[in-house]
Amino acid sequence: MRGIQIAVVLYAVIGIAVYYLQDYFLFHPEPLTRAKPYSFEQPFTELNIPMEEGVNMNLVRFLPGADSNKRAAGAVLYFHGNKKNISYYAKYASYFTSRGFEVWMPDYPGFGKSTGTLTEEQLHQFARQTYKLARSRYNADSIFIYGKSLGTGIATRLATESATRTLILETPYYSMTSLFSRYLPIYPVNRMIKMKFPTYQYIQQVKAPILILQGTDDGVVPYSNASRLKPLLKAADKFETIEGGIHNDLTKFPVYQAAIDSVLKYEN
Image 1: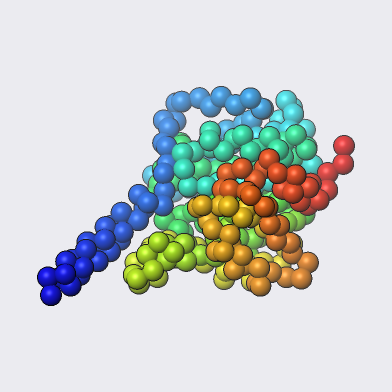
Image 2: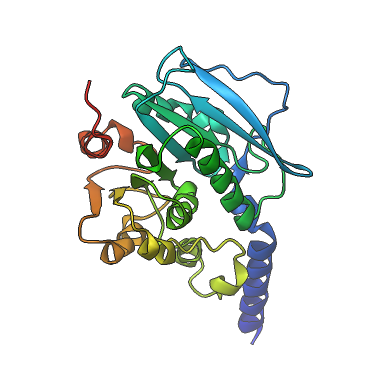
C-alpha cells in the first residue's frame, strides 16, 4: 500500500509540474531590449509593428542585395523554432537570400524584441501580420511559407488561410500534444497541454504544394512522429527523408538543398 501511495503522489506531482511549467519546457526565448542593434553579415531591415496595446511584433527582413528597394525573386516567410530569437536563426536566411529571395522572419512574443503574451492565437496573429506585410510587396505566387520545428504548426495554419506558392516544413510534428505524449504516455496530455498546434488537422486543408523535410535521427521531433503526416499529404506533395539528419543540421545535406532548389525554381 505504501508503494502505491508513493506512486500516486509522484504521478500527481509530475502532472502538476508539467501543467504549470509547460511553457518553460516548450519555449526558451532570449529577450532583447528595443535599443539593442542587430548585427548581421547580410543586408537587412528591421520592422517593429504595434499589434495592440502591449504587443509589438519585431520582424527582420533579410535582403538578397544591398539595395532594399530592388525587387527580389520572392519572399520566404520563415517561422522559426522555440529558442532564443532571430539572431540565432539568421544563419538560415542566407540559403534563400543567396538565391535571390527575401526572408521575412518575425520573433514571437517574449523572443528578441517582440512583446506580448505568448499564446497559440497570438502566434497565429503574428503570422497573419507577417503575411499581410509581405503581400504588400509580392503576389501570393511569389511567397513561400516556411516553418521550422515549432514554427511548422504556425506555418501550416497560415497556409490554410493564405495563398502561397509552396508550404515548406522542416522537422514538423504531428501535433504538440503528440510530442508531449511521447514523454508522458500515462497522462491525459490532451487536457493538460495549452498549446495544441494540431498540424495534422491544418495540413489537410492546405491547397498549395507542400514539401516536408525530416531527418531520421532527429531527437527533438522523432521521425516516427513527423512521418505520421505522410498519409495526409496530397498526391503531388513531397516528404523528403534525410538519412542521418538531426534536428538542426538538415541544411547541410544535398537532399535538403536539392529539394529546396526544386521548389524555389530559381535560375541564375
